[in-house]
Image: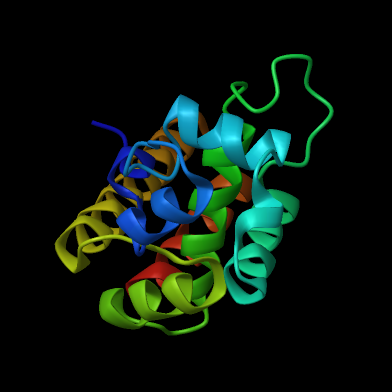
Length: 151
């Protein structure tokens, strides 16, 4: 299961009630993206909720792909966002708190920790392969990124 499949809409039932429709709990589920991307029903939401949903759509659903929002760009942007929060020194619980404050989405702390751990392991593999291939620039880049994520 992909990390972004474990990102959930906060106050899911309240939001569904305000929109007068059922939506999946997953923030990156197809039906959820349809509602966010099309903007239908956003006028039914209170201003704070609407602002956060619009921020989410602007920050993660904005790309020029023909298949947008099903192109993978929203998920990629969100994972980059989480990695940037970690690079700023935030731990898993703080990352969850920030994503909830910023976009009204949340994840379980353990899922964030697993994602970060997998990211470090991937960077270790990239570093090793770059060393084997003699690509010093890529090896250094992976090493720096790994250091940023490891804290």
